[in-house]
Image 1: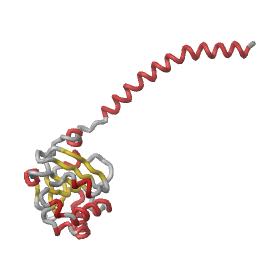
Image 2 (image 1 turned 180 degrees about the horizontal axis):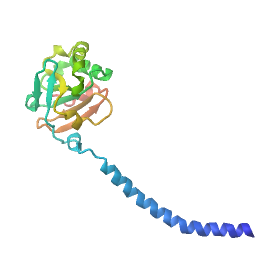
Image 3 (image 1 turned 30 degrees about the vertical axis):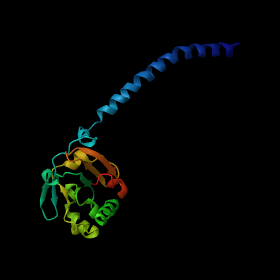
Image 4 (image 1 turned 120 degrees about the horizontal axis):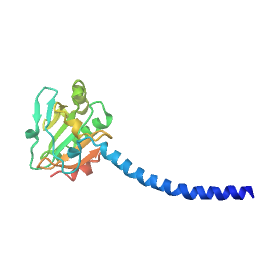
Length: 184
């Protein structure tokens, strides 16, 4: 008899607690969604399709500076954010250099964070990118990497249309066939 009374009490308590638990679950969901929205960096306007290209200042190993005006083109502009000590970045650069003829009517810039200037000479030597003066290789002196890099695999290739609007982002090892869709 006592176990039956205890069982009935448990059912009674469960019926009272269940609606409260359901109500709490419904309240927690919007709080979590609100927290996700609050983690935005403010740079999403540069990282989403249609986003504008921020002001660039790419300084080469020979201290020549290139800005947005230097990258204007009637075709796409490829901005490759890279680390000169990264194997994936080195391989991607070699792939682009080996197929430089495909990029002849397209502007291409390789931009590393400003702290990487001392590594550029080794990168030039290893990739032989210096044999392709049509490609600009340097470091970011306008903090554009902070606005553009979406954090993930390197290199990150941002492709912009002729109005300097973001069309596509590729990350990591990107097949040449994927890039060809954006070449004239």
